[in-house]
Length: 424
Image (tube, helix red, strand yellow):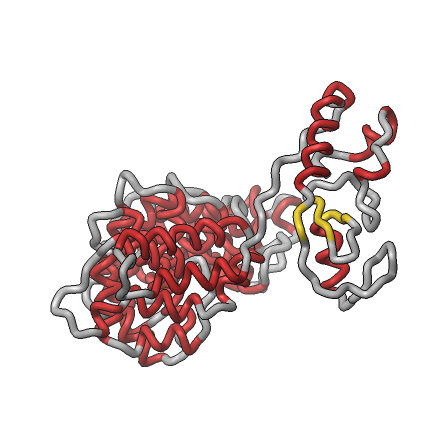
């Protein structure tokens, strides 16, 4: 039920036939079972999912598990909600109906058709677009669509031109829609490796990163991240991350001034997944990842993306050229110092790891870190509830910065006297 039931119980009586017999709450999506009894959809679906095969009220066996929407009752409930708005009752929204298996099969058949009197690019794209709308509506719909081999069908549609040996793969409306729908599902290891083991398919994904449509570019980055993460073979991961200009395409997404929040989120996920492949990490540095990461971390990322971005920074700082590139950016050290104990335990750990690499590599970074107040932050960190890994990194950093410790009055203060640091 929308809102809280307690105010209603105090000032207004909900009609008995508007309440679900299972939950005893106002029904928001009434459906009728084979016995003629009506329940709220969520309640009866939960009842059936736990293995029950009888009607909760009549105790009669359910001849089938079809749930028929009771539109008349739902409209009566909505009218009652509107009539009692002054008593704190909110109108229930009109529920979106779940996907029908027959319709899903028909739409997938239309989408994969390549010949016939009424087959066209437009009709195929429209079918996939309709499936995409259903998939957006609910997780249940996505499970239903995936259960009809949708992922396999969409992969075939997406790479049809490549698999047929066409010299140039098109970026048609059908390709755009199939790509947008495919990235809404979780792919199995076998499905991911059917893409990553095919050089033509890998190359096509990379080309889509430079498509004229920003949506295609974002979805291509999402697919690359999914395939890279889902492929367990280290050799296949190297093929994906080392192919063509994949890093340039992902970096363009992160740099673009027109990138949406979704584009930035997918861009940093893809970059992190690519940088997990040690053999090709240098390509990220060559593509300008250090500067772009620091610029974005200073302005645009939410907590989850900040953690992923900082983890990527730490990965790249494990390479000498990475440390050099980050060290050249004026905001790198101040930003990392500021992040400690500010965002999350994970963010603190990654920032400390990156600072440890930078300060180990360059004396200039040690001076900048000390000037930005890192020593004080580290002394607080080792006394905090942060992770043990973060504390170990903090202790190693403090040893590097021993010449920059606060003066004796600060070190001997009560605040720092309880430090868990081992004696140097």
